Amino acid sequence: MNERIRVPEVRLVGPNGEQVGIVSIHDALKLAQEADLDLVEVAATARPPVCKLMDYGKFKYESAMKAREARKNQAHTIIKEIKLRPKIDPHDYETKKGHVVRFLKAGDKVKVTIMFRGREQSRPELGFRLLQRLAEDVQELGFVESQPKQDGRNMIMVIGPHKKKAEAKAEKAAAKAQRGSEEPSAQEV
Image (cartoon, helix red, strand yellow):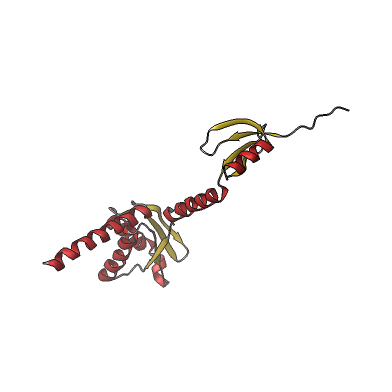
């Protein structure tokens, strides 16, 4: 009955990523206590398990900050909608086109809907021509993501921006900073 009690062993990684080696769990805990760090199990399925000496609170805080920064830089795709009628006045068309241009410059997608009423439903080619004209007018800012298609009483087309949302935001911030730096010099004169 001379059985030895087997102490579990772990592969230990130091606080700076250096390999310490395979040590007993008691020694690993002692090293962690001496260094005033936490012993964190990194790979439980490995044989022997891999543990690392680290400040766990600091690690959690840094990973939360990285995740927050990633969410902050993430672009949210927003689809703006513009509604038109087939018999639209030229001035009204220019106003609506201006809205589409503004949305595309901001990096948003634009869903253009033409609503047909009454007899207009028998002339869908009028709506199709209007959508093609709008697509040509905003060609330098966006591209047709989905071609015009009839959906009941409406005809729908989606225009996507050439610029990403993040690029548009950065460009807008740079323009704002440029304006801010020009103003003080005008006041000094």
